[in-house]
Image (cartoon, rainbow, N blue to C red; front, side):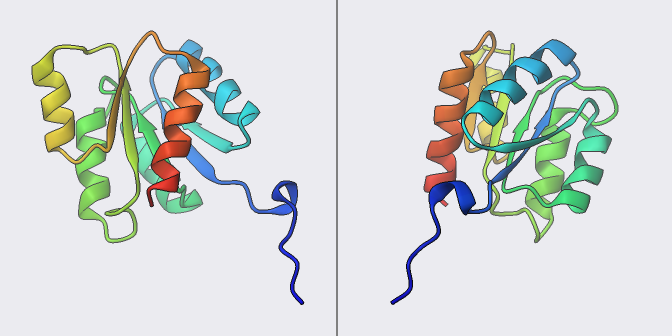
Length: 133
């Protein structure tokens, strides 16, 4: 009889968090790590794409405004890449206008979270997205 490994022994899911705000990175990373995820961070869109190919995360959390490539450009690049075309992507941004939300969803985002955010809510939404995949 095969007994599954305890939850603590299973591989932790890797989240790529990209935001140009070090404060947002610190708050979001701490909340996600406390919820049991591993987190890799980037402060630029081009850095996020390079880390994606290096580390192969299971989920992406992207800010809309970043130097280099913005969040929408990163999202479009991920959706065009067979490695990440089906990966869940959440946009985490201060842009709350309906046109911004719609643009993010039209570009392929699976979720849209407006700042300020609760780290607990963020971790819960990440868990929901990962369970749906």
